[in-house]
Length: 248
Image (cartoon, rainbow, N blue to C red):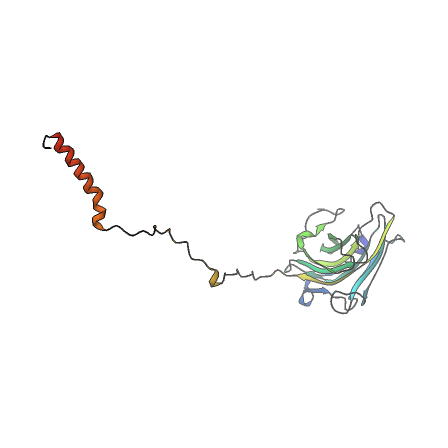
């Protein structure tokens, strides 16, 4: 999202990192679960986020986010933890999203690192219009925002996490942008430990090694017949010797 210093937690969470929510679920939005809207305070940008039951990916509700963002402004809908989260055992984040209209560029932000001054890591995406789309985002796809130190560096999952938010970037070439989108089923993604077993061919399809070419199917010569060429050569040589020695 665009630069939003006021969107970070106002007080530092406890130093100890708490395990993530049970079953790796961060938010299923069956309740509001601590999510709030924030904006730049300029009077034009705004964010209203609340659970709705009219559209959901799973369960009874999703989180709907209705926004308007001025050029150079920002708006987010986020949740900030009372104590930091340790997400190092996961490989990324998975969530479902949909938008009212096509072409809405959104950000998913992670606030991590030093509680005195959180680092912001962002993943940019454009959800489907109408239908739900499920995203699984690896940690290295979250990049440090441009206006902070080490811009573009990937998120390190060993860093404690203080909060998470969906944000709207500042519109380019327009005075403002507005829209509605929804998210649901935000969870930590775990890597599968079991590799799929290699499929073996059925016995009927397994072919033995090719046999060597067989000799032509002709009847073998008898031993006597095999000696005839040698005897003929011997007889001709003997004739030549007798003629030469005057015995013929």
